[in-house]
Length: 208
Image (tube, rainbow, N blue to C red; front, side, top):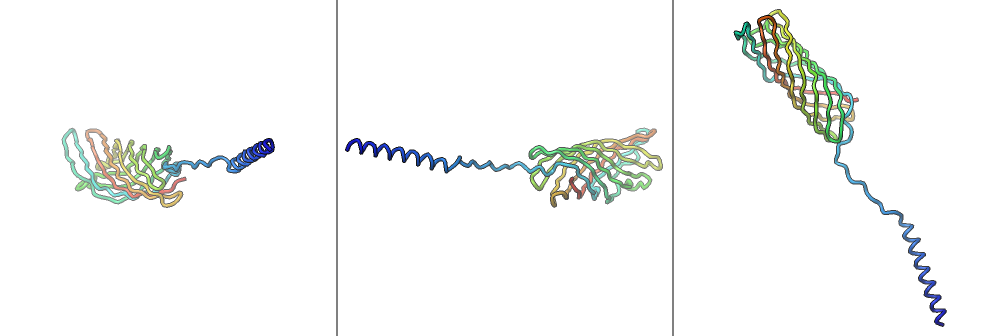
């Protein structure tokens, strides 16, 4: 009787052990959920080009001849169209790149219609912080402008610095707003010109 009871107990334990092993195997490995990422998707990288609508919100032109000042005033306000071409890289939320920009214009000095600021061109670096739909950035670079000094053409060189924001409209298009400040200077014979321009800019573009 004792032997039969021991054999029955042993059989029961073996059956329970096998059932537990089969049950554990059927559950499979535990599922580990991937952490939710807060990094912006790689959607700002690539070539971008577009148009700008520009208005000068502050300016000054200072000109001397043989170190004697004879012009010191603001420019006649103007609204002009321009264009840009650039390329951005993206690393996480950081976006950085380069941009070429041209602003065709004819902008006379206030009260001196024969002194006219012409086209302004720039090449600049940009760096900013991006979410999936919005980019905040700053820019800094070199700038150049034409200046008609009473019939004598002068080249003005200097720098441009700006801040801006861009907002995606879809996968490949965006709109933006920027404020750029130009500091330019040049000389011709005995004449020297220092000019500053602060320009507000609406931007629309496409990314490829």
